Length: 268
Image (cartoon, rainbow, N blue to C red):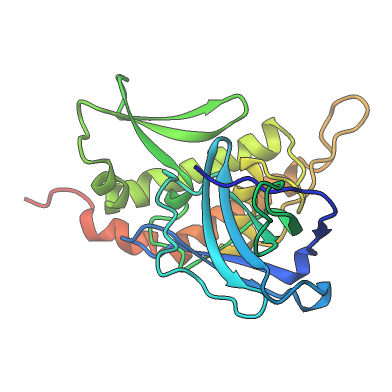
């Protein structure tokens, strides 16, 4: 059971003082690292630091040493999350101990709803943000959206038994993922008209963060609709989505990966 803390009188840690980096190296479970600067807050040197990863009811907590000596644990793998979609982070600074029989240890400082930077973008990205789920469907795959939850890719369970291998294959990455990325961004910006915000903990924000930080596409344009419900900058939005997909294709060398398995037809 994860220990609870007393939130009375806590300080707020500024976003500029925390950077969360998730290593998305292909073939390995994602792991988390952090740069935390707490000098300005005047916290006791023996205060304990915790890094928490969470999404809905799933929570992982990592001890990160003390104010005097920050130390990351040996294992920082985000093993409890099927994908990184919607995962957010918080930093907690807690007093060393509470007297026996007293209230839970006091929470001294908190930074919450932190979006991570995803490093070492794998060749299958944005697959690292997308759950592949076996499903009883007729087609080979189907992108599914459920209200309030991150999208996932339903995969025909009769045709594909090894989802991990399927998700890493050149065929999947070069043919399916670019359209999946485009469809998700269109859903976020065109259908939902989602507005990016550094304070957002929604799954939509993580996809926009990935496009901006990992693919270096710049900030997503804010959807602008007039009083009559008509778009004023739809072209700007769709051009940004095109740029994101193009950058994904180039950064992950998808044309070369396509050519590795397709020889322009059977020459025999």
